[in-house]
Amino acid sequence: MNSILNSKKRLEKHGIKPSLQRMAVMDYLMTHRTHPTVEMIFNDLSPDIPTLSKTTVYNTVKLLAEHEAILTLNIDEKNVRYDGDISPHAHFRCKLCGNIHDFPIERMEIKHPECEGFTISETQVYYSGFCRNCKN
Ligand SMILES: [Zn+2]
Ligand SMILES: [Zn+2]
Image 1 (cartoon, helix red, strand yellow):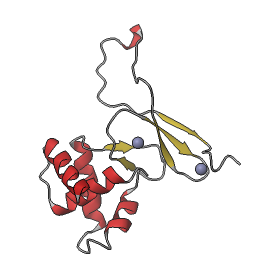
Image 2 (image 1 turned 180 degrees about the vertical axis):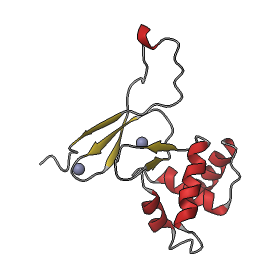
Image 3 (image 1 turned 90 degrees about the vertical axis):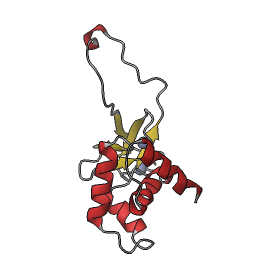
């Protein structure tokens, strides 16, 4: 229940009217650190919300991303992934299991004269390789 309240706050903070389904999707993204696809969100939420459709999930994540309440990740070439953690961090995608991990980066700062005068509105840093589980 507490996290649902958090998701309502997040939506309102980003100027989104909190409907029940939007809150459910937002809550899912804030509590699942798996960087899920629309499919994954839908499959997990639909048993609890029978009225939910895949189109609604798709439209909701699009809306949330437009309002910068979530991040859109293009790290997976087959599926767009979504992230409820909007703080600056990098991502690591395992080439074997496909899991996406958060990689905290000390400071995502760019200090180079070549970059002066540019305004950055979005940052996506991706690494790929093999995760701890798949390495062996
Ligand atoms: Zn792996
Ligand atoms: Zn992330």
